Length: 228
Image 1: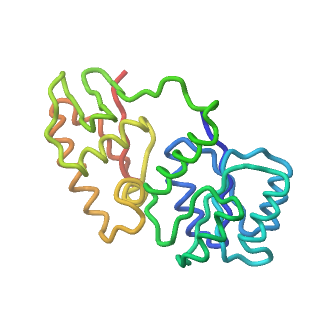
Image 2: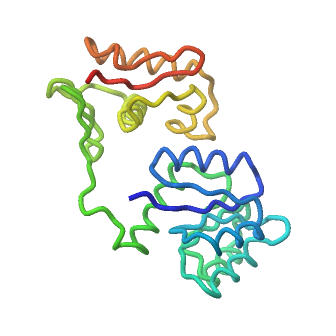
């Protein structure tokens, strides 16, 4: 089930990070740069979740939240650089479902979004969540956090697992090194592209005869392309 999420933030960079990271996790993202345009979209589309910044031009997040609550109970996650207790209390009084302070971890945002949606939309939760993904003799157990090859668990570091798991959940899709850094390490990671290259090299060594399934896409980055 793809949830429809409206992201309202006047910073394009923040919207891009949220769209990229949540899009990979299966969310359908719509963007708005201010409260007025967000209201117009809310009149036309039924969203499952709103991620809402506080400080915006034309109409701030508090005012927009008040308008939303006049006619809708759609869950709202407040996203703001302000972390004072008063702001959080005001948000909860206005009917905000969760509150995240910038700078934030994209992984935390996705986790909180899923938690809010599972709580507020239980009827839309999948009856069975697939936790093991298999391609030939290669499989990833998302609950157990391990990757197995021919039924033998690979001895991966936590970050090697995160990268392998991410690629296996998105087969045949090419990602730039920057996208992989954002999606696997987090947008606040301080490093360079060589970090991705090093981990890809290590994963290929672990995969042995399956190393060719991690494909270098020249001029772009990498993708996981299992043989059919």
